[in-house]
Length: 113
Image 1 (cartoon, rainbow, N blue to C red):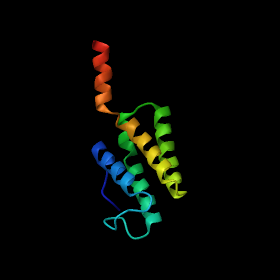
Image 2: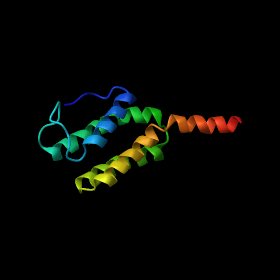
Image 3: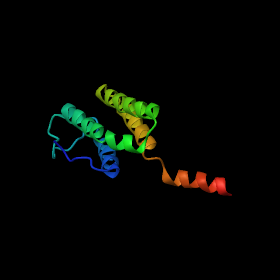
Image 4: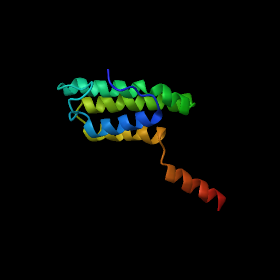
């Protein structure tokens, strides 16, 4: 298939690639061919492949369920031609898994002030 997701940074890279390419701008390289609908499915399969790493980071079952639903909803939105909605849902997923470190720093800094 495609590149394996071995660490969270690989997943982050794949999210970025999918945001830039979905639903119909995937380059014909690696696992991706000329069939853009198939490419979209491949991209989301790759994201799912990284989910065990997310499960190691996020222990809350309710949060994990929400993340799975965000991926499903993003794929569905892209499949229905709603590029903006799909991107926003994928970005919501990304924000939960990879929260803004500067925001976290500012919140901690504020607690110590």
